[in-house]
Image (cartoon, rainbow, N blue to C red):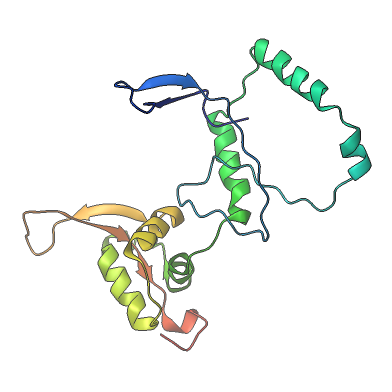
Length: 187
């Protein structure tokens, strides 16, 4: 299965973008279980952990029969792409294979979502969150990865006018965790 039945792209030296069937699959192996780095969900990957390989059984499979079955199913019109529910399930499954960035880890340790009653009391821009975390730890943090982590965790993004400014500022409803609850001696 893949994520979409068709892809659009412009071939080299062509003038127009055209739509083509999305038929390709890719397979690879990696050492270690944390290798997905795409903050948008890595829906293009179907990772799984191989605990053992039954080599005699694997060698007994006739690949020409496998390809024949694939072609038969394709010609029968079997859906070979994920629907929205399957993509959502894939995101949940892939979570165990994702690399946790330092920004993500620090956000989950030092911040929490305010309750509905508290929401109006807490607002920080990405730059303010970054400055707050830099006061806690000298580790080099990325504003881009921090923003991606804020969205991934699900902090509510809002716009607000600060000091009667004509331009809205975007930030998040985010509440610092009291130092007594962070579990470290930094803050």
